[in-house]
Image (cartoon, rainbow, N blue to C red; front, side):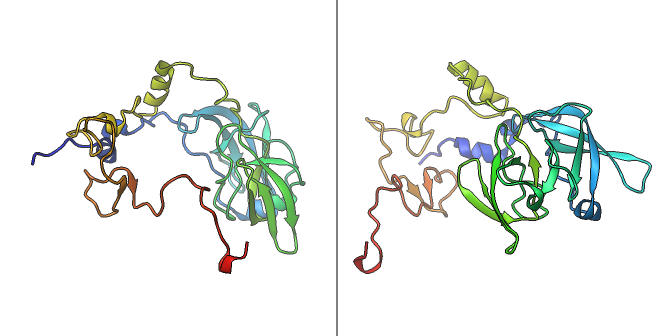
Length: 260
């Protein structure tokens, strides 16, 4: 039997035309690694420039920080918050005030505040609520157990350490997804700048030489859509190593021994 064509997912694994050009991108913003100066006191940084992040579609801040005990200064990249401007001073550390754009540990932030770029574990430089227009809300802080409860952008609740750092305010660039694309051409250019293929042809609509789901008089897969984890690359398409299939929540869950 003749060999089929190389699948789209196989070509993506090789990279090349599917890799985004990030030569002029601003870079990944994150907090400075925890040091003695930030744990005990605070340090000051001045907003010098706004840069655009092409991956996350949000503005970033370039902050100038005067290094302690040195005559030189260095620059760091932070996530921009709504309401900041060039020349504004930003303070990071334990003794910072609760102002817009400042970075504090969660135990020093008042309840009900909107925060962003929250650390999941102490010292991981900010993981939660980083995309444009997102924020978390601080709900409770238990000082006896050293934990805090926050509401995520997905409305779920999460418990973290109360020494984790967070930025006061909401990530800039909100409302990006509110404007509709209206036509397929706008969607095409929106995906092409991220090196993603659009439009995508369904596997069942192709010929059997192009895809394992292709061919047949009617558009159907013709076999189970679940595939083994150990299947060869040209065959590994569909629901790979699926534990279960179908719509979630359509099962009737009974408790142990028939007790509802």
